[in-house]
Length: 427
Ligand SMILES: CC(C)[C@H](C(=O)O)[C@@H](O)C(=O)O
Ligand code: SF4
Image (cartoon, rainbow, N blue to C red; front, side, top):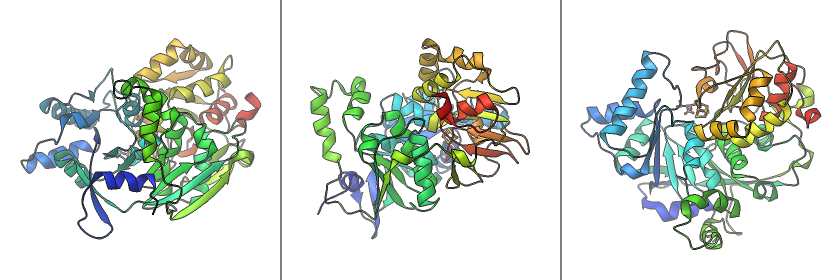
């Protein structure tokens, strides 16, 4: 019987089947950040088990609040920093080299097709864009992962989401995933892998695929996943050119992970994207979506462009193309947080940062910051933010604040008008 990509990854990493429906898998990468890992570290220390299974397979970053904003966040950063030094973890990123984990680690080439990846962060599903099984876990699983390099998962039931047709102008991966979540609802993919397939995914960049997979968790999904193809090979080529004689050889190897045509799916969803329009959330759940025409005109106080969903160079280019030569509305404040130092410096070199600054944006260092309402743009009670992030939960960006999720293009148009605006008139 045919297997899905997730089933193939499970089979190749299987250590044990402790009880029916659960499997223990060997891990290829354990990623760590300063919010959840210190809790695991403290517990491991208390239990006299302050060890790591493989320093080379652990990747760590201080990204959520950096530079630290107060004693609490400084202590969290210090705990991760001290731990990384104590264990001589080579891939540890601190101020000057740090960026949002789910943008930084792919950029460093740490994720490969067929890998198993965990992190104490719900948006770990992002890395499935590379054809990896990547899942966010809780503290106990993270501890076991750090100590032993294994993790238990439920059988990977998969929802196949076929994205066909052609993306219309002004409609991007963010609009597609918001539309998908709107259809599935916030728990429609609970305990399921969301496998993104079809011509639309095939023609997407790795950045766009990461945007798709990033929000799988917002439909309850364990992981998003895409088939690793020539786009994946090209992205990873600088990191794998010693492992493979040619790109063709790499592609042939990657294809072994592809879901078989006769694989069994829990559910199949067919979406023709050709008639999609830009989508924006309302309310406090990511499945509450409206097409732009039904929400345009809603005034906003702040525009935020950044995060692991949409803080990559592609996103900055799209927004800058709309903002070039224009000013943001005087009623609005706009913040750009490039997701990594490389994105920041590429954007500088391309002249994008100048466009943002001339338009009136404040540009921050790479960090999660305002995305989870911890720094760099926390909302006041009653304020409204147009945001390229992934969560609009109540109080997410500040107590009593309201968040509308949207694409970088829609956020740029919104910055110009000071109210939610259709990006298509600027393209
Ligand atoms: C801080 C962290 C645990 C959290 C997550 O798991 O997602 C954060 O990244 C978020 O987006 O809310
Ligand atoms: S950018 Fe936002 S969603 Fe992504 S990891 Fe950071 S806090 Fe979480």
